[in-house]
Length: 403
Ligand code: PMP
Figure 1 (spheres, rainbow, N blue to C red):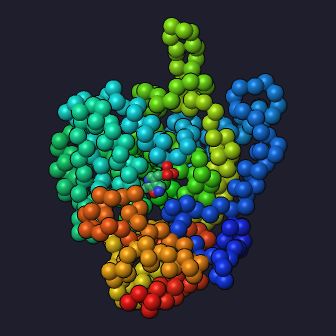
Figure 2 (figure 1 turned 45 degrees about the horizontal axis):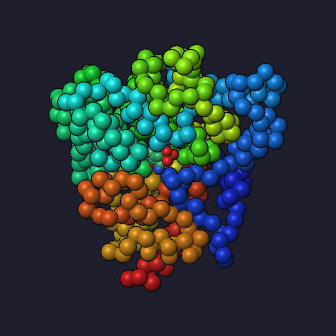
């Protein structure tokens, strides 16, 4: 895989910031977009722009055909059983809220909801809100000293027969990969509904929802080289069918009178209103982009890059790395001595180096690490060795300035 050829497909990467070429190490927050995604969105607006499903005219039927074709592409991409199990959303956050809202009537006051301690707030706060509505209790699944899920503690918690187990496939803050297939099987054995946040996994791993055998799996287009404003809620048909729709209105109905409304069948039942059409078209192009790559070679190269990044970071001295750093993917979290992560981020930015600094929407994880925040460098398919070397050189000058 020729990474430099690949980089040419990402127009944003060619820019300079002041005197510095952009060094983009914030892919976990959002990935850059290849030209074919930008072109597909442009094409939709320039040629096919029309609302889907509604009109008899040709533009609308073209838009509808292209929009619905992406449902099949997503089905194939994550190996879902059927196309009706793919619900277009505006992102992971919306999808988890749809589930948490939709399950309200199924949750008893004494129910337990297990959530992994490193979960993104998007996979925690909706469960807290569900607990407030129902009288259920949210219980954290503890981490071990390497910030991996403590599987012994998890097995014990499962003895409480939780109603829901909500996990991240990959932690956005640390890049830790959770053994979701095994954990979902254990949860299923005690009757729990399993929800897996795949926002950070989808661009780096091959995801097979039938092999994981989870009830729900979620991700966002913008973290997999697609546009913002679109995401996927995958659910097993029977589970999706039991969700009370969060949004009601046009598109999701079969018939409406002033007395009563009959909802449509899946997937329309959970797609009220005008969907993110251009986003879905862009997501389809992103899937095609990923499918063109040699996925095994990509995973191997990303893992080698991350190992190189971690080794160089550790060799710098005065660096604390967080989490396990032998099997994480996509991201590395660190602090420089006692320096504030925000200062480090700003000084790197002055050299054209983009990293993320803060609590990474994982405040309980930061609390368990006993820190307020940290810096995170994250990589994507276009990251090269020069990016890592630039980043390390940048950090050396930050260190000289601050320490
Ligand atoms: N979960 C994880 C693990 C994430 O990294 C993110 C995005 N930072 C989200 C959920 C939320 O995704 P979105 O903002 O696209 O809804």
